[in-house]
Image (cartoon, rainbow, N blue to C red; front, side, top):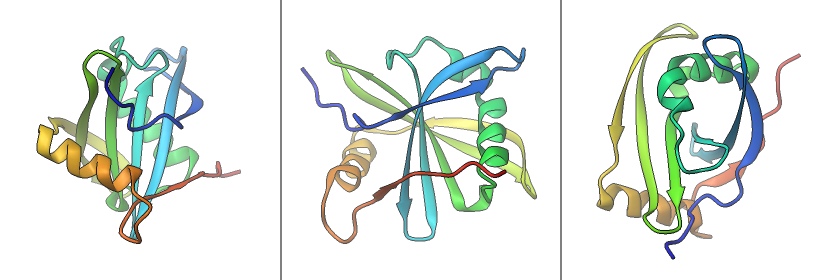
Length: 136
């Protein structure tokens, strides 16, 4: 069984592009002045909700938490005990606080291992998990 590098994800509900409720999982880490946001399907095995609604979900996170997209890195996280973790990083093109388009770059095994060490480490260079508060 492979290690789950993000076992402490919180439940969050966003709306898909058809305005239907979409239960997802979210983990947020602070890394210097940047936020690292990890989204996963609720069952963690990747049913495709994020793939079909990425830009919609990213924009909802930006709006809900009043995030500066220029200071955020968004990731798709998929985990299964048999294959372990897979991470894709969204490269988001934005104008002001509006996400316009994106591409998804899958992390290589070396990039994944490097990121996992920062997520799981207790060292001062490690990422610190944080809780975001929704704007009123």
